[in-house]
Amino acid sequence: MDNEDLKFAVVALSAIFFVIDPLANVPVFLSITGELTAPQRRSVALRAAFATWVILCFFAIAGGLVFKAFGISLGAFKVAGGLMLLLMSIDMMRAQPSPTRSTKEERDESRAREDIAIFPMAIPMLAGPGAIATVMVLMSRASWSPIRVPAVFLAITLTCLCAWLMMRSAANAERLLPKTLLRAFERVMGLLLAAVGVEFIAGGVRDLVHLAQ
Image (cartoon, rainbow, N blue to C red; front, side, top):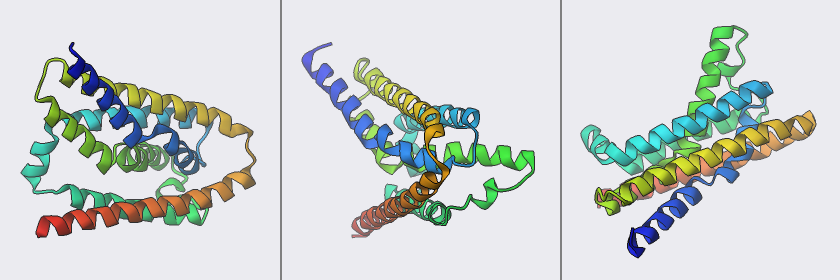
């Protein structure tokens, strides 16, 4: 491995880690899993991190081909992700669980827990448009080098591992916080999540406008 390959590996790890930002997603994880038990939260954390790893690896390998095959632009992907975040943020600001999570039937509860891991944690909070675009750009720069390509996948793996450890630790620490504080915190995070959704939509609209010009 020469100096250029080493620099690429450092850049890849830095770019993927900071665009995913595992620490910043911990408050959202605590808010949307408020109705779950500690073991269920740990399960959600593991599945969310693993789903993020699968999604990013998939788009690193075939992201460009998938978008071209379906005629989907990154801007449209951002808008769709932003709209989904807005819907979730409304329930959070009302400090109420999503209707899919409030059912009393065990099968519906199980389905809801899976939805929490995939959406919104894996998509779009962790493996969002920015993260997907980042791994796609890094893979294009790697040019299928036998050293740089593994560096990209190693960066994805380390970042997802870090995200899992942070969410798992937060799930254990949350038991010490009072419910009243958590409800207030959930409303604040709902507002921030709505802002993130608007930012996704605005960025997607800008991308679509530039694409149309």
